[in-house]
Length: 165
Length: 121
Image (cartoon, rainbow over all chains, first blue to last red):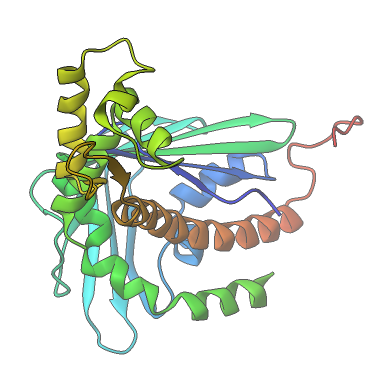
């Protein structure tokens, strides 16, 4: 079992998540770039992911959309890729599409998201950095209804994770 | 959770002197003079830092009118920790699912990158 994810706040506008995987980085990269794989892990229990488009090249666009299984409410993220260096680095601008869930995350300015993968002895270290347009946007991103909506489903997620393991 | 509280808390914590002051107050209340002692700083400079901490709700001023001791208030710190923890949990849950998926992928494509004889524990 890998060590749990670590979260740090490198600056007022940033959130950085670090996590290790006992897997070669090409597979970790694939899991972040191939829609059929992304759908299997990125998201939240109680939410389907009807839209997952990935045009992985600089200037290419991605679009993710989740739909609540019960209420049918939707939200998502989209934006262009700004750096692609497989399997080491991927960066994109992330715009929030509040759909019909609302939330306090500003949808105007993008969040700059980067993913860095390094591999050592078969262990891949992932560093995901999110640089928000402002401090308020960063704090809003976590305080928003989206994350609140995810909390109630934590128990479900645990069950799924243990069933999948 | 009101984002403005968090802004004040994180801004207050961004300074090493203020973190040192909080660390000192974690051991017990102290007057401004006692707090200024370990730092190569004037009392007004320390007072400035104390004001920032006070505005963020991280410290309060005790009853003693003479000493006006500062006391650590843990609630905003707990809130800041909770904020980080919430974020961490969201990602950890995603990554646990990713772990399971990667295990599946490795089983399908065995030895894709690992043909090393030596293993490091």
